[in-house]
Length: 464
Ligand code: AMP
Ligand code: ZN
Image 1 (cartoon, rainbow, N blue to C red):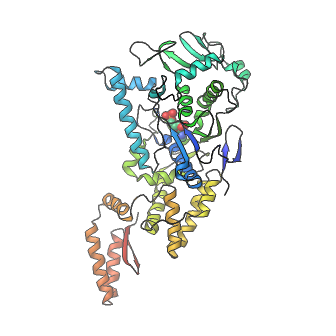
Image 2 (cartoon, rainbow, N blue to C red; image 1 turned 120 degrees about the horizontal axis):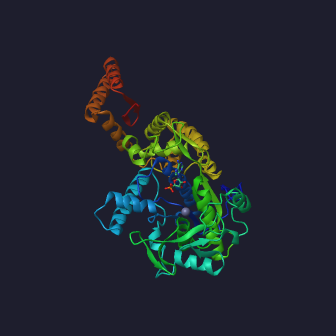
Image 3 (cartoon, protein in one colour; image 1 turned 90 degrees about the vertical axis):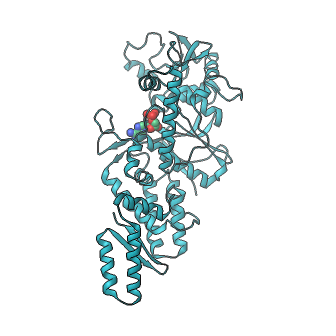
């Protein structure tokens, strides 16, 4: 089956041909760790986790390298550290903020059913030249200066956008247009308004590293150029992130990497997820229309959030609503009911086919509904097909008992009492007292418990 992916750079859906099928290489920009991640931040993590899983299915688990970085140097982190730990030296305070936030992020995205990436580099480990010789930011910046693509001015090192004829190709912004539209008041030390910072000086109370340009710290974009080159090489297969990163972040990553390495491309497929809004409005902290993954996980199982995210194609905007979450929860209850305790076999061809068409998850979910119906009324093979399709894409990580147990807790239902009612009913049925067995079934229904009889016995679940 041919895998086709939409590439933001060439603006077309193309057959995916890896540079090396034995090592398919993907980089996705990770979080800046200063605060809880919100549900919008979860979108690229889930979308590219689905792609990672698909690539592993197609090329083999050991043949995909997925790098997602952690940005642990940023002025927002410094501000948070000073505010939350005013008594501590800044370095220690920063470490506390980044460690705590990174741990929280890991817990959040694991609960969303996302596999850890193959490698998760931290930006601060790639500022200075390394003993293992992997790419680092200072060396990249030196290369850019040596090749005439960067200059020092006003205490900074800046990328010279005019030195790259096709700067702006990813976002479709032409240098000339930008100059014409730019205000004269841009920083006077820049040759062009689009020139961006590679290195800036740090004051004594800011984090800094000794460099050929004095004690300072890197700009944001150069981090990803260094970490992707360190683990994936100068040119790799897929680069991803949310569409707000197209400009300036990814545009500038491309400029730095291509100019430092002298290559015509940085990555062969640039993939961007659309934005998430809540109940029809832009997510915004100031208006209160904002929710963290952590808060949502207090009310919903992570798989419900995951399914709710995948109901929309990754390139379309998502409207995140309570109604949508309730529907996703119902769907998952049903899927657990049908499939949770089934062992895995082969995933369905229809599911792989839908995903292979530029991650068409709405189509995939439509197929899953059909497979569910065959599984519910069909044989073990259909049930295995259904269960293994769900597991492939990160669902059914719990047993049916654990899934139901969580709902019982939430609804305050006593499982022992239900089990005893069910055995009373089984006994009534055995002695053909159908009046009593129906009465017990109605009593259970009134408690919100639905029962299912099969030749293996009677099982039950809580209706939402
Ligand atoms: P940030 O921490 O803001 O750099 O964002 C981390 C990732 O989340 C980036 O890939 C962003 O593009 C993505 N992102 C941020 N906000 C949203 C949103 N509302 N919807 C979808 N993706 C988002
Ligand atoms: Zn990046």
